[in-house]
Amino acid sequence: MTENKSQPGNDRRQRLAPTERKQRIVEGAIQFFAEAGFSGQTRELAHRLGITQPLLYRYFPTKQDLIEQVYEELFVGRWQPEWGALITDRSRPLRDRLIDFYRAYANDALTYEWIRIYMFAGLAGEDINRRYIDLLEERLLTPVCAEVRAEAGAPAPADVPIGSLELEAAWHLHAAVFYYFVRKYIYQTKVEPDLEAFIIDAVDRTLDGALAITRRMVGRE
Amino acid sequence: MTENKSQPGNDRRQRLAPTERKQRIVEGAIQFFAEAGFSGQTRELAHRLGITQPLLYRYFPTKQDLIEQVYEELFVGRWQPEWGALITDRSRPLRDRLIDFYRAYANDALTYEWIRIYMFAGLAGEDINRRYIDLLEERLLTPVCAEVRAEAGAPAPADVPIGSLELEAAWHLHAAVFYYFVRKYIYQTKVEPDLEAFIIDAVDRTLDGALAITRRMVGRE
DNA sequence: CCAATAGTTTATCGTTTGATAAACTAACGA
DNA sequence: TCGTTAGTTTATCAAACGATAAACTATTGG
Image 1: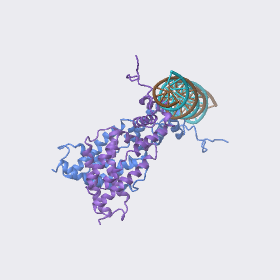
Image 2 (image 1 turned 90 degrees about the vertical axis):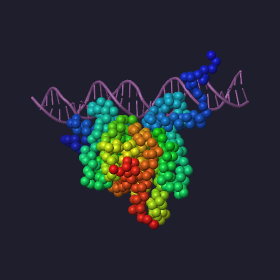
Image 3 (image 1 turned 120 degrees about the vertical axis):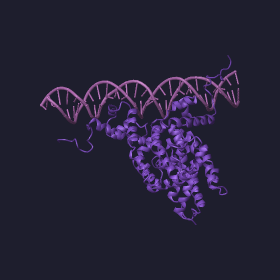
Image 4 (image 1 turned 135 degrees about the vertical axis):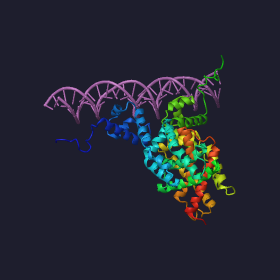
């Protein structure tokens, strides 16, 4: 018997560079906390990672620090800057832009881990949700309102500011898509299997209705 | 000094009839778990109730039994049977019926406690959410689809079954109202202050769009 | 080949937490 | 008035859990 280092089931005590180990811990934590919530035990997280529990504390002083890192990775890192340009590109029909955006957003952001940790964080009273919503209103919802205005032939936001109820119209579409994934990943019930078709219908319903209401509310130019 | 029983600050050791005590515990548990989640400690719940922690175990064998009772009180007890009739009353415009329903539903069901405990339960993997959604689809969403069909002049569900995407259209409105309260009570962000106006707009957006799509999807009679 | 560095584990501490047992006492009936 | 019933508290247990200290060992440079 020479080396048994690479034998299956005997691969413990795997020495990694600090950055690599830290990254693995964060990724494992995302998966684990998404399932178990933040009251999940550090011992079980360590077990899933194939390491011992005190090792976590070599890389993160406290459990809360690890959680903070999870937020960073998940909520700050996943917003794609090009989405903003996608929304405001008036060379394409607004309907197509919204469909493309929500297709991309659903794919990159609204994953199992994202949705669940987002909701866990909200219930825990963390301000990460409020900060994310500020970002969302600034980069998505307000621009969408401006595009709806343009589409409806209504005054630009610079002349007539976006009203609270108009913002709610943009939330309306967002809520439909978001809640679809809440049902899928939190309640774990059956949802429409064709995500593409679902998004198209949701956009059409919201947009048609929103256009009519916007014309009524804000008036045409 | 004769009696100090009713003096303020000295009212401990308050003896209650079992049913009364049990009721107070459940109501306190609803409030407490809504804030703290189900990982909230029994000692703190007892403290808020002004009783000692072991007393909880006189009335509920385990913490989980108490939680079960919270579900019962909150999710089973709050559905008003008359809501079904409200939806299907074709002597009134569908728009008015939907507005009235969601006004009532928001008032009676979508409270701070309800929303938060519902979400906590979902994340915990409890099947109460799936059971509630079955109830919702049967008593609300499917009937709404049938009414939209009638309004759109499309075939009745008996002839052409309700499709998955049609059900999603009913979910669309439901999601908008639900998510409004998620933002209010879970993320705790500013929302449109006029709930009435919000509901009216949401109904109009969804209904107009849904009518058009239903006509396209199912065809007219 | 050896010694120093540092990644990882073993052992353990102090609290927290759900739950139980036994003591205490307010209320009611004979 | 007194004794029994039962609602409530005090005291405590055992396991769970975040966190720390010290021992262990894989890797690297000379």
